[in-house]
Length: 234
Image (cartoon, rainbow, N blue to C red; front, side):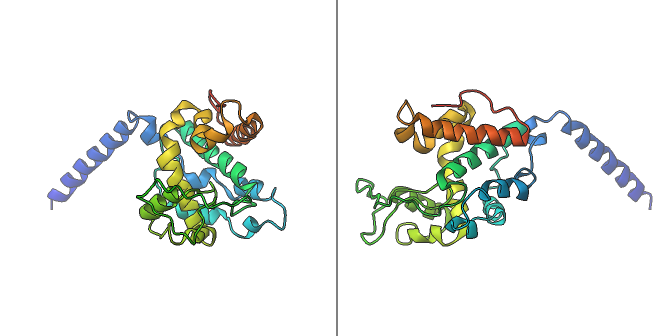
């Protein structure tokens, strides 16, 4: 019987050692935040409630569908310190707000085919169009194809599914974010604008649109109680 107290004593020593070590861990481990705690219902409602009552997105986008999608991207909002996490979440929702008009739009207003025939790795279905859909307005055949391969849906032959399934819609936005935007986020919010729509907006092309994105970002950073950082424009 004496073996059990000894084992408990050793386990207690190990537990104390882990707790002590936790104080030495980098903030990327100890300072992470819960996405659900940051993206509260009040925060989400503060965005979507600004959309007009007849907006299609008001009956499509929900906080829960976003959180369900985040379950497939568990590293979203989990890089660096707690402040870094908050800035990433603020940046993501700043772009989502801008792209969807406060969650008003599910699909792009000015629709086109958006088929890049040079991307033979993602051949277009001639009966489909690859215009913007979802929170970050996923566009082009190669993005639909790659997102579909990663998430598990037929993006080339069923691009419209992004506009009919809110969880899938948020998954495509998170896929694009992790793949194309996350790599430059340490360079400042301006770099994320360039990664999303730089060819149209940056380098003085549409300073009004750039400023609109910056305004959303700084507002959300303020709501999260975090400094927005530098290099906000592009």
